[in-house]
View 1 (tube, helix red, strand yellow):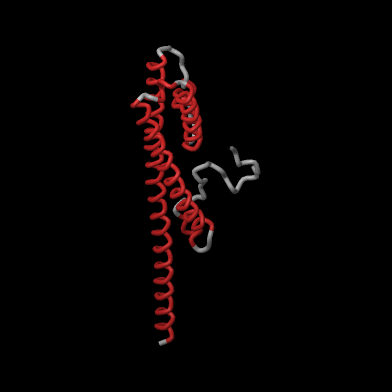
View 2: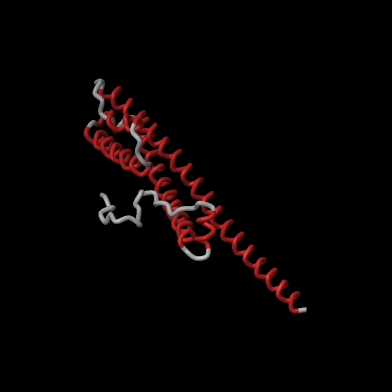
Length: 181
C-alpha cells in the first residue's frame, strides 16, 4: 500500500513538473514568435524608408537640375553591415537633411511627390516607434523568463539566450556609456 502511495506521489509530481515545463516553454515560444514577427515588420518598414530616401534623392536631383550626390552616403549605407537600429538612425538623419532641403529650396516644397514622401515618412516613423516598443516589451518578457527560476533551466535546455533590445544595448556588459544621442 505504501509503495502505491509513493508511486502516486511520483506520478503527481512528474505531472506537475511536466505542466510547469510545458507552460514555460510555450510562453517562451510565444514571445519568440512575437519578437520574430516584430523584427520582420521592422525590416520591412526600414526597407520602405530606404526606398523613400532613394525616391526623394531622385526628386531632389531632377528638381534642382544638377548631378550632385546629396544623399550618396545614406544610399550607400545598404552596402555596409549595420544593425537595424543604426540604419534607422541614419535614415532619420537623411530625412532631417531632406527636410532642410525642402525649406531651403521652395521648388522642392511645392513638389507633390515629395510631399507624399514626407507624409509616408511620418507614417513610417510612427510605425517604427510603435513596433520597436512592442519588440522591446516582448524581448524584456522573454529575457525575464531566460533569467528567472525555474524557466531558466528550460531556456538553457532549448538554447534561449538573453538578447539585446532594439537599440542594441547589452545591459549585461561592463560598458556604461551605451547611451548615445
